[in-house]
Length: 137
Length: 136
Image 1 (cartoon, each protein chain N blue to C red):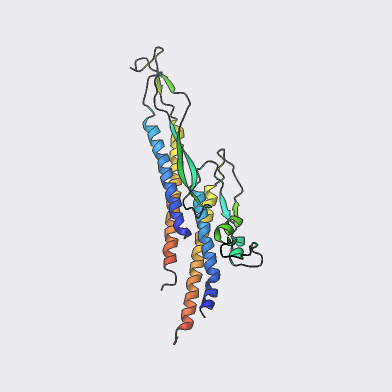
Image 2: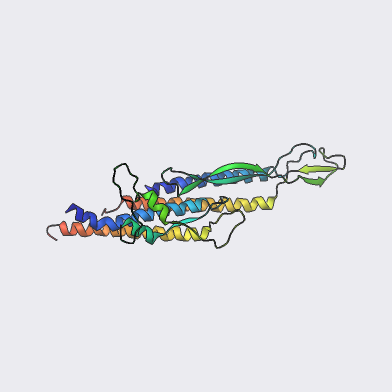
């Protein structure tokens, strides 16, 4: 029954997009977690998606899942603040390489995709309900 | 008698089935709107319907001389022949070819067609029960 597959496909997209939102939330929450410029601090995280079949008998309509979480390898942001307890010899403090603008764009994109998939699910639901009511009344 | 009822509904039934499958494919496209290297696909609906109705213009069939032979007309095989990749309007850097707006438009359009076919099926049943009703 292909319309029930739509539920699984949309559900897989919902969970993938919410993981993306989680990554954004984590990045934004840690945007100002200062660390010593020599030590390992927080690095911005991005999720990578991958198409995966939700139903072995319907490989032409794959859902989506999170393949991996990759860390941004760009260097930490150095801020001159000699009074900070974590400042190095030159007076610099390292902050995570989180780009708030990029994260906000990511958040809006994830939230729009989430909404679209919710709509897909509700359309499939109403189609199935109408199918069940076929030839009634 | 029953086979005549079956014939009456055959077209609506296979069209509904294909519409449901197309809905599934469009849902997959929408779900994978952010998946790197995913290529949007769609059903060549006219060809698929022709194939499903077994018209002369449908895909070539393999003859089966044993019950253990694979059918060339099973849905998976028939689907592969009519599934096409969507041409790209705005290519993206991650190799994804899904345009969410296009997919949503097709999704809504397909849902409407599905509801129309449901209506047709309901109408066919109504006509039949009208013919069967004794005093109306």
